[in-house]
Figure 1: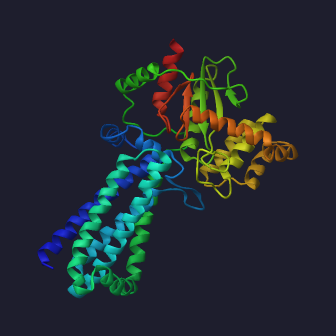
Figure 2: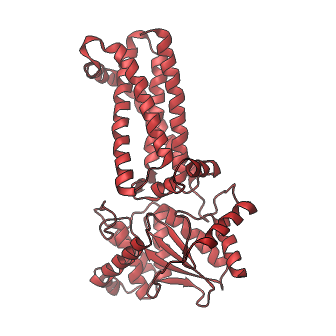
Figure 3: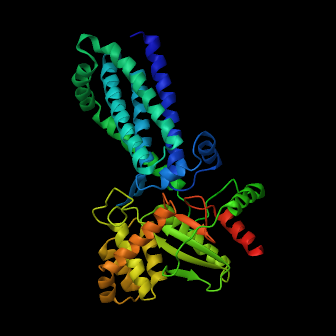
Length: 415
């Protein structure tokens, strides 16, 4: 291959991978509900305004409640992938001529795997979530670009035996020779993804920094809310917290394993503290688990979200809802995946009758109650959690902006 072309391909590859890393940082922020104004405007102006939010809040957007790591978005894996590809482009540039072929072959194999994974993610996005996140779509283009740059180089080294034969011959040897370097590179980029996740996680009070907290932005959002039609929600048996004579009602559909729902619980708690006589909050379940939600195809073998929902509802029957609700989200925040054992521990600390709780959690009555809430969510076209309704009017899906929420409450109280 012409040395000049080789250099151009790999410099272009480094630039493309930097773009991929930047997109993954934005997607990680979206997953944790802390995307800035630029990311939100990009989603709004180039596609369905809610597409990024819908994908980020879906059950397919990441791996939740992992030991030690907590919630890990798919974008974290993408961050590691693009970082490693950038490392390989750089290695090709710096390697001696006899070593370049092995690096090129590995880059081709890795980028081909990236294409396959992106196709799977696209199918899931269309068939399961019902929308394609515009930022995700751009990462697909980035992955294709990396593959093309890898293919052009691999083709020049393939000779008569063909690309795949060349890859088989050189990848294994290259990995063996550079195993330590590759391991360090992967771990560094994986750690970088974790750092991005930690920095992107809103603080425990839920008050995340927001550059859009100016009056014009808030007024525009409030006017849009006022124009929305009210919907019908059955609140007769829903657990609730707040003033019985409240002028404002908030309905929250949530999953106890959802990080965004946990962040929203902090925001609502602050709102209840700020307006103790004016707000009543009703809590509804929409577990992102096919074990108790027929709208979700993927079933969690542990049925963790369903167990947590059952525990909260059964605790409510004993007047212990608030204590168990807070305990469930405390565990969520600490990376604890809900199990029969963990929810019993929470309920026991709250002073619940454990025999009654266990009988209740296994009852058909509670299963049917959760199913009824899910069916109501289907009628309301709930696609993700959390989904909030104020005075029966829907908010935008996902973690609400705390500044907007407070301004909206103040606006409604003046009516």
